Length: 97
Image (cartoon, rainbow, N blue to C red; front, side, top):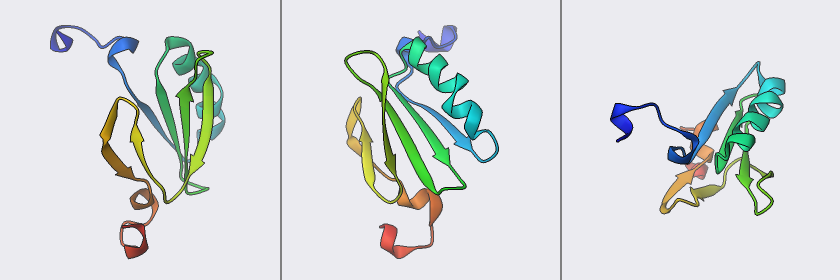
């Protein structure tokens, strides 16, 4: 039971890093660590560029990257849950709805 132990990589569907000053680390060491651990999805919220870099494990067990700003996306593990990425950068902007 997860409450009785620390989660292992198989318990984690998504890791998120909010990157303002740590982009180099987030795209380097952390990306490789999450990939090697088999975390299916890793997001880097690039505050400066106002984009989300979505890394998903492919069949070769390496990350493929997609960059999004105002799109709506879903986690492969929870396809019925839609996430509007535009709200991350423009919560007051009605065009993100």
